[in-house]
Amino acid sequence: MKKLFKRIASVVLLSIMVVSLIACSSDSDDTNDSGESSSSLPKEINFGILRVPNDETLAIAEGLFDKYFTEKGIKCNFIVFDSGVDANKALASGSIDFATMGNTNSIVALSRDIDVEVVWIHEVLGEIEGLAVKNGLGIDKVQDLSGKKIATPFASTSHYILLNVLKEAGIDDKVQLLDMKTAEIVAAWERGDIQGAYTWQPSLGELLKDGEVIVSSKEMAEKGYITANVAVARKKFTNKYPDLVADFISCLTEAADMYRQNPEKAAAIVAEELGITPEDALLQMQGSTWHTREELLSEDYFGTSEAPGNFATIMKDTSDFLQEQESIESSPSQEEFNKYVNPLYIQKSLEKAPK
Image (tube, rainbow, N blue to C red; front, top):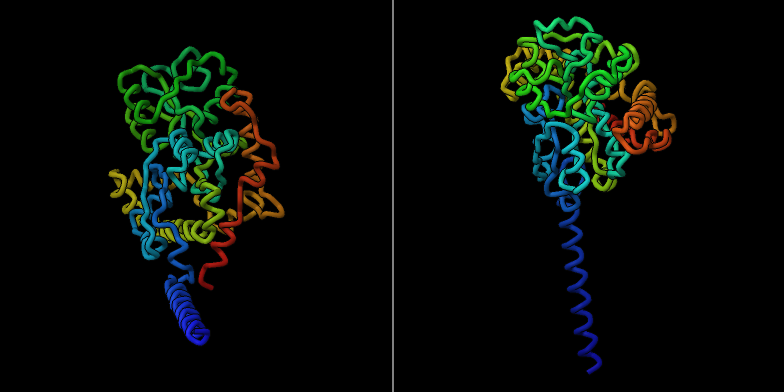
């Protein structure tokens, strides 16, 4: 009886070993080209995007997300948001993993303890964003806006710049500001409900059909009021999949390199994706500055984990201003912003790049 028990135990033990070896072999073989186990990857990633001519739009149009994610068995979902306000709600609920938004809305996210971090700067805003006024109203300078109705999406980069424009002109308490989404701004403009608006392309282009820009974000950037469209990601995602965040940055970098190498071709691709003319697309793309990974890791922007860059300081200064304007209840500390603007994933993307 004891011999029979030993034989049964031996057979069971051998079976367990065989199953374990098969499982290990399966785990070893089930990897993608970058060495990641497919079982450890998410089934899908949700990206919150803006319909603007940037590196992300170009990457989507060129199918680069397929190269970096779909080929790994990951489905990419792209959800369009008109501004960062709704994107922040989606981030807070966990329904999206990444979101593109103005840096002011990313400040709102941090101030409200939404568990995200800044991982990329798509573009530093310039002439792509501006204060447009209607023709024929005798508005030639900012001071002429006194008593007028001006629209902008609140808590956006446009809102931040507009407040500073009015403050510098000494009329910040003499203008009626209206909170509108970009599509609402165009409709209100056409009805004659507003005399001016601070907004970005492509809605800005619609206003310029019978209006003109009297101040642009490029002019304000030269005065130190820098704004940008940034990519934020949920920390629950970044902590679990840091390599995928690096892949996201590599994807955007490849698209941006296409633009740098052939602006006209890139503009044509973006134009078809957004339903605008290639000329308008190129004009809008040239109205902002697209930086390389190396440039973003400089002291002017992300810096390093040990020596945070100047962009974190700009974010803090902007945050303090937003608190003064009661756009946010409290302004996070400089230390919080230093951690929030995280260079880790750009560094990792560079490390993974072919030598």
